[in-house]
Image 1 (cartoon, rainbow, N blue to C red):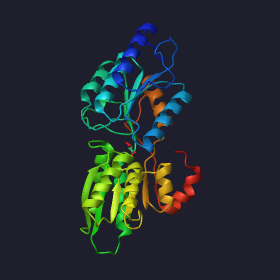
Image 2: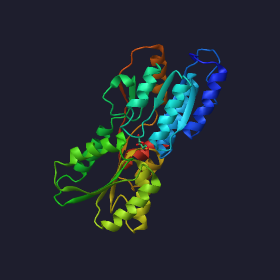
Image 3: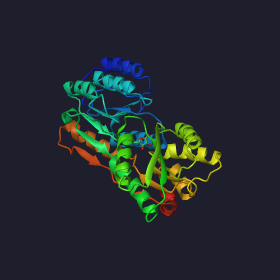
Image 4: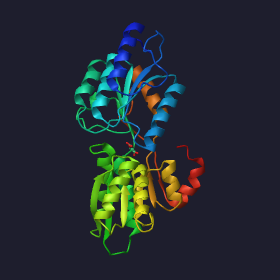
Length: 328
Ligand code: AHR
């Protein structure tokens, strides 16, 4: 690590960090001191809300270990204030680089300025911020969520090609104010709005969790007996909704067509079984690229401002073929 503090000072700061974050410190009990040239990264994770997030955390922890990067990890439990506390704790500990996946898009300028003033580079992973001042972070690695929404919409348009009957759609949105919820919604709407037969009859947040997806879908089915399509912003909400659909005596994938985003193993299994009709992939395996970027920004090297992840889509047949090799 490019050490800036003595062991005693950093140990004190770390103790503050654990208390302040209200989450766990993972990544092998970093001391933040020691005098070698090992890089220390503070990573403020969103939470553990979905299968995608679990795979993302694993990828980051494993990649840090194999890249020889000391990782200080905190789980914000989907709360922005916890992430801000964690970032401040990493600044106090004088880590070499901070990476985080912002819970929501807005409200980051103050803490990002604090990191900049402390000369600690910041890397956004997975989710973007809406800050006008792009000098507040070095780079952003993650998916194009608008494109994901568009892919979902394009599948739907094709699926109902040549049909004129109204198509009643319900949407389970991700965490309110988050980049994937905002962008997946706008990308999808942009594609389907050209054809008036597509009607979004209800749209509510399911907070990216299976439990909330089930709860909201139960209410939506009661209020809207004629749902043709469910568009869920992630697999977990879709899987929760499948339970609600089955409990209501309907057949997911047939009575109600289902589109989701992520392509985690559980989602792909439901797709292969015909309970989901189409999944847009969003890759959680950001760890290796994140560690490469971290090494570069710590050295002061120039990096691209936007690093996109490569993703595909899956039909049930494609899911069957991909499942045996699926890592998450
Ligand atoms: O930001 C990525 C999204 O967050 C994933 O699609 C979702 O599953 C997660 O919780």
